[in-house]
Length: 121
Image 1 (cartoon, one colour):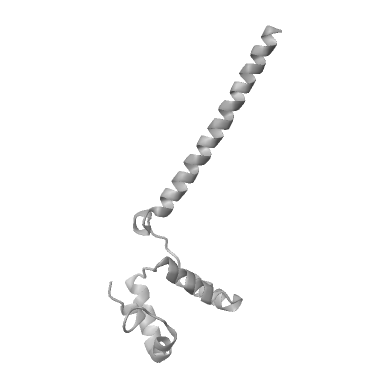
Image 2 (tube, rainbow, N blue to C red):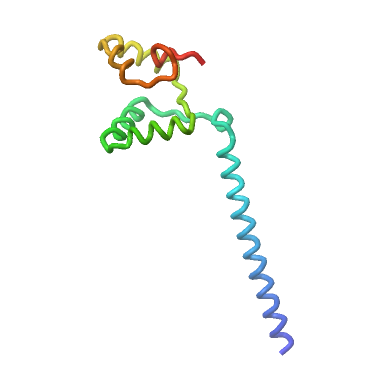
């Protein structure tokens, strides 16, 4: 009888240790994810996304009717996208060759004065 109660106690103790380990692991996971979210994007690294993928994403937002919500969320989050100089040059040349400057200027609510790809830092 005494052996059985010791086994039960050991089992309960092991179970408590497992639960404590899971709680500790969950807390650690939550802390690391919130810490990563609080680190500025520049220190977390960059993500390279092809321009056609960005265009498809924006097109999808408009087709699905989510563009205005996305724009509002981006403004509230105060986020920006860094564009490589070659990509900005391609856009600038394309917009110029298709005479889209006035249409682009009229359609963009840009916090920068002038052309959006010539925005000072």
